[in-house]
Every structure is written in structure tokens, then in C-alpha cells.
Image (tube, rainbow, N blue to C red):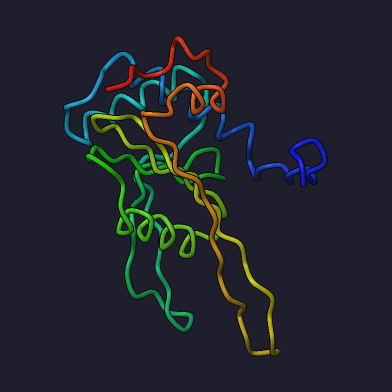
Length: 174
């Protein structure tokens, strides 16, 4: 099937909001650069979100339940507009543990979309969507499926276009 005849992709869930969040991320990354601790980036991102007029909660507690009872809690870095979880990382590269953390926050919160923002030496992000699977019996709660894409600093111009920025304002390539 040629690209001209490929079926259209369904719109991304919360695309407008995640595009704005990524634009704020790349602008902040361009100002700070790499090398700081994760907490520095999270603090800067909070300032940038506020200046952009994007509503958020910082480190809101999410209750984790088992069989209808609270068994623990989690604290994602941000819950934005009551719709998207944002986790800030400052690592060389994101790994399965970071993805697992985002998926657990999505399951516990009931929200469907998370962004993992990597403020490491190469700016990048992973957009994670949790989709509920079909129920097979009346007692079945359904299975969870996730999908996502990783865009790292080596592909920053493409990521910048997704974030609504021009390629010349994207993070520099390493």
C-alpha cells in the first residue's frame, strides 16, 4: 500500500494538549540544556506551564487500590488539565522501568495519556496511551493495552514539528 492510499491514522487522544505540553518542554529544554537534576527540570517545567496558562497539579497523590481497598499511593510529577500525566526524567535514555512507572500511574489514575519527558543529554519524549481491552466475561475487567512512540534528540526536528515548533528552535543535536 502506498503512502497516498494508506488509511488515515485516527487522531491522537488529547493531541492539542500534548502538542502544547511538548512545545513548552522543548522551549524550556532549549533554555536550560542538559546536565541538571530531575528536580530542577520539574521546577522549571512548572514555571513554564504556569506562564503558558496550562492548568496542572504538581505531585498530586494517586491512590492505588486492590480489590476496592487502598494499598498505596503514587505521585506523578504533573497531572495536566485533569487529562494527561507528565513524568520528568533526566537520564541518558528512557528504559522499560520508566515506561512501567507511567503505565502504573495511568492504571491507578484512570487517565489514558502520559508523557515521559527526558531532559537528559538528548531531549526526547515518549507518549504513552493506555487503552482498555474488551471484556470477555461479566466478571472480567478487561485487559490493558498500551501504545506509544519514542522520539529522541537525534530526531529533534521531527519532534519539534509534532510539538508545533519550527525545527530551528528544536534542541540541538548532540
